[in-house]
Image (cartoon, rainbow, N blue to C red):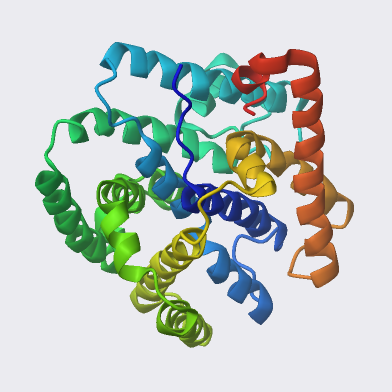
Length: 336
């Protein structure tokens, strides 16, 4: 059986992005941290989920694998661990469950499972499901067709970013639920990963250069964007700036990863278990923050770092136990 090829730049992107996901939730328990440091870190880690989507678009099987075989593989990989942890969170009322996630009536449970609402961040499962569905259409397109679609999507996304409330005409109660699952929030990073797969070699050849010519300017521009965003009130301009940061951050991580050909064990490990970390970390982060509600209501170097350590350490411990007890089947139950 042919060994699946590994791409260190994509592994690095997945590893950095999943740590950033845990970091986002460790900053504070407030959805919008009013402190300067908290807001800066929130902006800095905004690439976390787009980075994972970019990697997913890159890694989607674009070969001639039969659709039925591929669908079965994807369903088995995604849904059993998602359903398992969703049920654990609802039944045992673990910290971090969304409003209604602790209600065990059938209607609420079905709604939470269908729309990824057991834990706020589980919307990723709903999103990746329809993105994988769209991927079977993308596989039929030529390279030029995909590139043309990507260009059109860039324009549409910019219009969407400017006029979010027009594209999401949902009542206030449901606004965030709809927005976080909206295709125009997630299609561009996913399709960007797909395009990168198609043109990866030529892109790397063009940007493989010295730190001064590539890495330095990217960090400088990105830093200026993030700093300029801090004094601004929330609005279209801040959203445009964040979009710029997201893609500059992804580009820099890929560029940094392109300098290695062989896997680095810790990066490879984090990349392989990224889905498990995603599913597991939030209750651990919220459990720690629940012990210190005042201290974690805003960013604190100490408590935010401890929350991150709790989310990462707790998840790794469960993954370790899962692998010991279930062996190769742990990926289908634990998620890693």
